[in-house]
Image 1 (tube, rainbow, N blue to C red):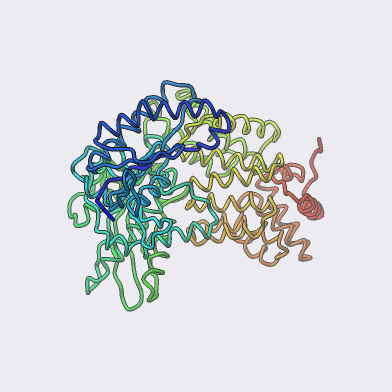
Image 2: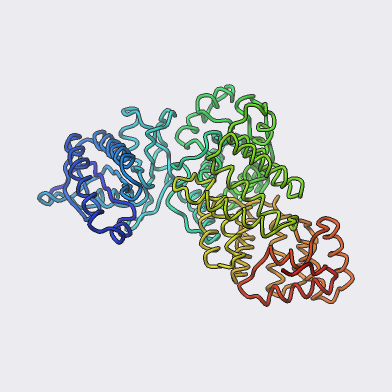
Length: 620
């Protein structure tokens, strides 16, 4: 049996089955044309050979891994050019996987692990993207003008050990850095990546491919972050593994946030032993923020200090200390990483707060699209009537300057919906109509950034809930979660969607996950938990959590729980508290912000509120 070392390229068409269902003849003809006019000539020109055709895909062999990578990039560029020249219905995307490994030679065919891994990598590649193994990235490092973004280690079918994967970035200005050894990478598979994937599983989220946020287009002003290895300050200098592990996990999790751009581990870890100015690191890596820190240990207690630095000024934006006791290094790393990420991210995290300050510090005559968004978002997140009005006005001003902005359009849609959801609207029907119009406009765009997609699908989930279309709402919410599986605020609000769809246990699971990720968000996840506990008949638990928050209609939910516990005076006091905040609140307006699959839930709750003194309102 003959064996040889080869570079294997695997390619297939994204969504081929559905394309064939829509237009079998046209799809087949276009695929054949692409193969004969682009793929076969390019592969031959790069000294490769197609050894297997598989309907919508092919396998090719190259003697040079450099030729293989260059060919893959040429193929994707050629596809992009051809897609730009035809109608949207005639376009299709290809995924490409590349591996360097030993293959079995059987005449003109090739078999073995080298081929199998290439096929698995192709499945991990994003549409119109290229995914390569660590062997390929290491072999061509410093030989090509392409950057490689580390995508973590992935467990693939029929292989015991995980494969370290990279995504080819043809448009990146970052210089490539040599990757860590596979031995270190495997150690971090066990200690880091597995914990990240486990967290996603607990949350019940269907992830759309590995680190897809790295590849997708996002607004140019989106905050960019580099995470440096945390320094080992322990007396024995034996915690280097933990400092690298926490930084590695922070990178992996941040890269799943749709509104943050994260520099790859390969690039940021090149500054592991830096002693220079952070501002120069930010300039080298093209980021606005740098995360650094240190680890130390006393007895069984590990202490991590993390810092977020504005790389333009060198000033500290945020710093915090995290302590955790225990003897299991994996558990320590997982929990400490979660606390660090929770403090930095989300609508109220350190990164967003710093961005708000930057946006408001700029001259109003020269604002970019993202500045308008940040200004509007900062007002939206006050959750006051005045804040929502200001947010809507800022979005409108931004749309005058950037009329085709999906980001500002969906932000304006959120201001309309929240007026209804927070019981501030003087005309709920009109606000809901506007929110629907705006979100439909956004979702008609097929090239949304993950950030905009998250906001749009999330808003659409609420609007579908009110139609009611609970199955559609759950599907939309799952899309939002897929775009931001580690965003604690989105996870918590998803609990409300699943609760109304008749899945209270799932809703509680989501809020529990959010609570573990970001303890500072207690005011929100306790609010959502309150209604969950009411639906589950756990009214004492509902009172305990609702007494810790005054968000939105929390006083009304507290009144419902108190009424069911026979505490009528407390329920009446809670209703009066709500009316001081939202004097126009009525049972009618409250019901317009909720819609359960089981209508008896809202009917009974409305009856409780009527007995507690909430006005009925006008029934149209």
